[in-house]
Amino acid sequence: MAGAIDTILDANLRAVIPLVTAALVRRYGNLADCEDAVQEALLEASVNWPATGIPRDPRAWLLTVARRRYIDAVRSDAARQAREEREAALGAAGTEATARDDSLELLVLCCHPVLQPVSRVALTLRAVCGLSTAQIAAAFYCSEATMAQRITRAKRAIDAAGRGFGRLSVAELAARSDAVRAALYLLFNEGYAPSGGELPVHAELIAESIRLTRMLNAALPADAETTALLALMLLTDARTPARTDPAGLPVPLPEQDRTLWDPARLAEGRALAAQALRAGPPTPLAIQAAIAAVHAAAATAGETDWPQILALYEVLVRLQPGPAARLGRAVVVGMARGPLAGLAELALLDGDERLARGHRLLSVRAGLLERAGALDDAARAYAEAAAQAPNAAERRWLTARAGRMARPDGKEAR
Image (cartoon, rainbow, N blue to C red):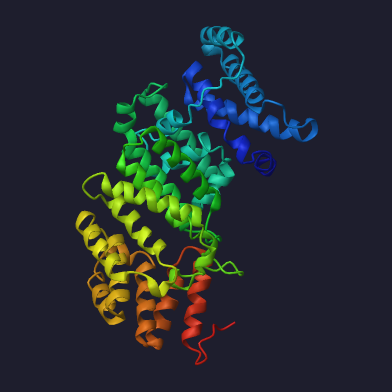
């Protein structure tokens, strides 16, 4: 059934799902039951629409069916007969579909502080983006049953915690924006650099994270952090067409065909990055966007202003001295001052247990060793990184790179 739903839910239809869900939540107040009713309506659409055609107003159709399914569910519970009468009366009055767009309010609701970050993203993908449970499970590399349980627990937790739903003031939205941005950032990163699975990128997750971040930015145009996040996403996603080769393997940034980069996204991203920097004291997101903007300004890899990027990384590490920023700085030191200097920086991170659990440190070391001419050591590091990489496409690329080090002609072993 999930396959049929995925066929029906194209990008245009998916945009109406949060409107229908929000309309039910505003009327009935129970996120879990309302979202279940919307999913029932989508199942019915997947059966009826291929035969009858998509209705002229899909939102009105879905809202009408979802309301009926909600009331049916209420009626089926004998312990809630009194509520059933009240809800049935509400449902009979005014069945027209609302034109009000509550997508942003629904996004904020899905990022409720009682939820863990991963649960926030999963619930956002389901209620706001309209993805099926199977699609979300695939994005998080778990079983559909496990993801269904996680989403159900998340909805119940929000309902148990109690929350208001409706138009948010700018002050209220700003107060909750940190949690929303964190969820959107995690959603984008999972799309752009999947933590597992077969694909080098998840284009759908990237598109949804950018769409939702645009909404947040439109609602908070003076919020520099949201502006910086949107800039970072656009500048990073602009490189997506050049990030894989015809075989589906990742292409490192220095080797990408920059004529494939999206010029419109680059221009918009650079303008937003500059706006975020001008807004006040630098923040980690603003610095990351600025770094991406410097990369975007170089027509070729050789024209990259590595000293400027290194200066920005110095600021980033001071603001956010975590392993990711320090690993990125080591890469940039290797480009600005040579691979041996990069390897020396990398040695300072060997004791960081957070990096030891992944393959990134080994992968960076392999690249620096390759540039330093230590091909045997590079081959071993690439092979070790491949053994730890959870993403299949990246694992194949690292394995091929290890084989390349062992061949005097520099070509990957087949």
